[in-house]
Length: 76
Image 1 (tube, rainbow, N blue to C red):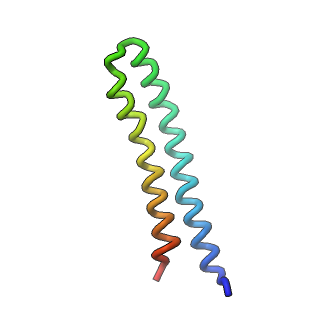
Image 2: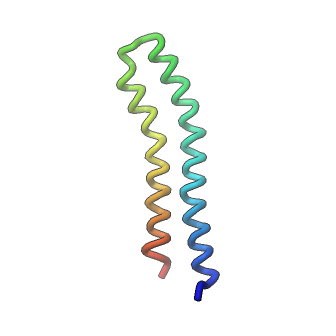
């Protein structure tokens, strides 16, 4: 039988990934716009710009790790 706690854990896992994704998207839009502007002015900035664009995506990976911990490890 499924208990209310299992549903709340699933909601928490969804919120962890969803809110992390929204936060990363909001951060990445500003970084991406600045990176495109920098590459337009100086093509040697491409490598540095790619690194800066990838950094906000690590937040989503952290949210995914938290979701997996909630779903598979559970709360004792």
